[in-house]
Amino acid sequence: MAFGLNIGRYARIEKERRFELARLPPGVDPDFRRLHDRYLIGTRLRLRRVEDPDGVVLLRKLGQKKPVPGGPASWREMTTIYLDASEYDALSALPARTSCKRRYDLVRPEGTWVIDVFEGPKEGLIIAELELDSDEALAAAVPLPDTIRELTGEAGTSGGDLAT
Image 1 (cartoon, one colour):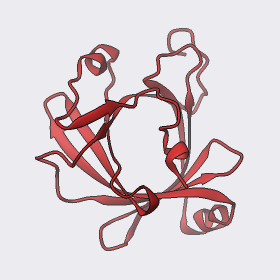
Image 2 (cartoon, helix red, strand yellow):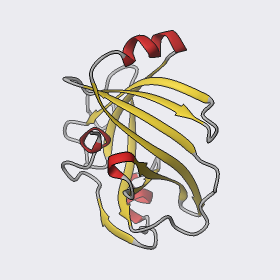
Image 3 (cartoon, one colour):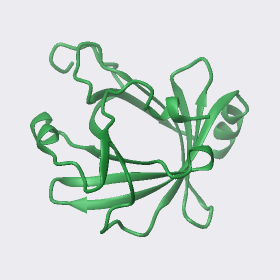
């Protein structure tokens, strides 16, 4: 338990800040991973397939992120189960809202940012996330250049909310 909060036994606390950017910042590693997300309708579950730029599947997983009751807006309780191809295929038959994005890394002194560039219906949307272990370091983090606004804790901006 963190700060007296009841966190699931197999979950971890993710502490992150999220920002909308106007453009991809300089210094981003040009290598990316493509994330295909399926937010299962009627649940808080996300089915994710991660591919390299050539379409080779690197990872399949089922995850759940939810707010931490009584915790700050920057905290989420996260649980992940890694899947093989047949498990992924079985779950991908369930109805879902979907999104696809390219994920880039940007290494900076405060930590490694992940930057998602959306494809499809949300084409052009760019969201940067910084995850750190310390609440103090997270609060002190300076937004990247060309930040439009902070999305941390803002309703309607989670991955599931942005999926179509």
